[in-house]
Length: 383
Image (tube, rainbow, N blue to C red; front, side, top):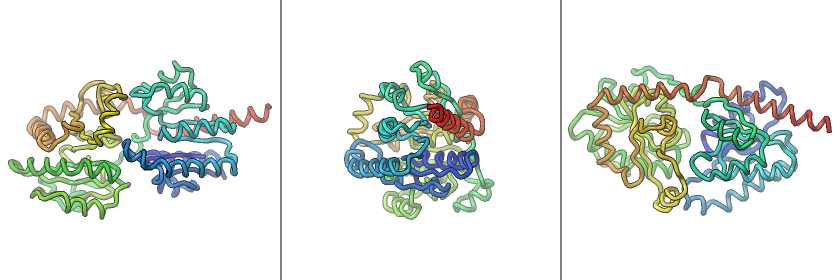
């Protein structure tokens, strides 16, 4: 059984499924996932889009849908009796799922740790009772679980393998309809429609301000989870400025590679931009209620993972009320006018690269999962 509830988890799950199929010929995998896992021959009895939510207001409204998905998965567990369960990230759902699987005697491997170092540290003790092994993708997380007595293995970050470009500079600009000789700013407003709606208007307002005094062009990198037609419509509805703005579909990493810098919604995309050595300004906005609750519960000095790993303000963060067109334009102008600041940022990205591990993270994770499966089988046979 494999359960992933986010786009990144779906991609990791697909890679893990292929790696497990290579190691365990004939293995059958079912569970919850998206398009990537389905293409990897995982029987996705629950579509992850049904349970993916963000923010307190969205979560409250989606509870009935999530409960139905939870019960559907447990019904399949009872029918199919899997020999191993792999739970990928998505902690509010998967930690509860781990409890039910533990009751049924099914060994659980948890891949991608919840951010227990940022908030709700008590989840470590719940995981200790419910899982056979934790597989982490950040090096500092390993010690947290070791100290708690949870079997753990650090395998590195899957993005090291995945963040690859496919287009030359000329090919990219020809595809998106922009001039390769004009300085370009990439806009990455998020991977969910709600994020795009919250983040893109201020990014576009900043684009208008930036083009008042200098020649620039902008490319919106369309996340795989976003309908390009919907994004084009959103652009037409919310943007009245004169800046040249185009969209890039299935070319996010190329947009990062071939732009002078990027304005990035906080999330996995910040790590992707760092791997591509693209200077960035990080932004984000959520509902007032979600922000207030988050401020009370989350205790970290920085918001984006790049700064957390660097343990310093390597990239500027503009969150909630600080995220406005004036502030974004000012940060971007500073980076454009100070190449030494961009170079320092890139040096910081290169230093972080070693913190993400070597290539082959999913292969190492699959090896660890097979080890847990074999150990459980040996225990059953001995019993």
